Length: 398
Image 1 (cartoon, rainbow, N blue to C red):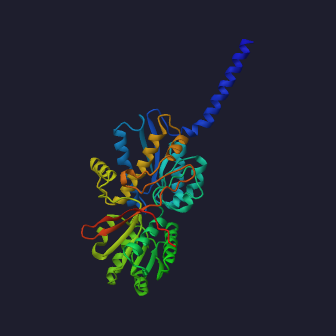
Image 2: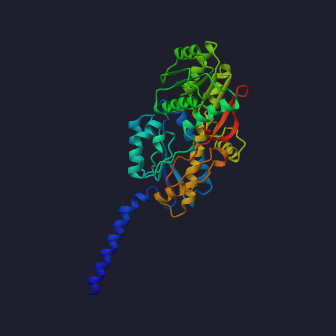
Image 3: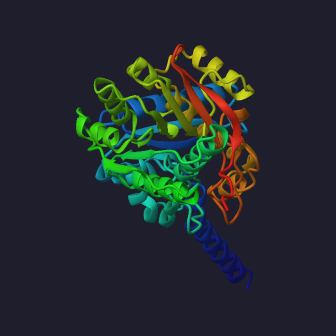
């Protein structure tokens, strides 16, 4: 009888252990007694390698800083990088390696916007928390438990920028043209631009595509000049806007340039010089020389590890997204699991990385954390961006 009870007890214990193993393995993925595995997918050898390298620099420096101070609750963070060359198939392969072989708790970035969009089903299926680099609506609507967008959307940034032109610069009917790359995130910005202008009773005087990789923007420049565009909204990354501005100078065309976060980078000003006389951007980040607590800490960290980023906005992106990761790990506590990490991120309220990121709040139903942007203007003498507003939301236009 006693022997039978012992056998039954062993069976029950084995069954419980089996359940714990099958259910808990995924929830404990990447978590070791002394380390936490975290992945990152960025392009470091492909078409946007400069962006990827500077982003990785910001992430790596901040994690070194945290690890040298003992890590989080006694665990050091082990960063595992995969290069996707800004290609969807490589991003998918990198994701699968990070999850199955490296067993990461979370992935900071999943490549660019197209790569992240392709990975959304896998992210939810495998329950991998990610902080993606893009702010497209489908990333957070409908709610996705494991996808944490950060900062304001591209649409919010453009809306706030047009508000600034109309209300702060007092230009009631800006003659505005739109130049964009033929990609989804740029098209979302085009729609936001048109809708915002329409809300003020204005239609764009022109809209034209600029092919990615193009080295001559003559036709686009002449189109905008002929249309009489005094303001040109440009929705590209650095190569596109530099191409347009330098080409415009050749045709003696100097409109006011309006753009968004990824073109609010000091490196662009150094590349175009006096070709851009007036240049504004709506940004989700503070500027490199920001006097906020976060700005001072970030520059100290960069100096400590010998980093001198040529693309400061991307370094800021790496610094701020890593700060989100670290804060989530802190709040999750010592008995960390994947689900506790997600729950912890959903407690962030008005988190702003010491002033370097638009104030953001996550909840258990909303992972689009912020509507706020900061309008920055190019100082063409010092070749740096300076803020001209505090954090602002798009206005309610009646």
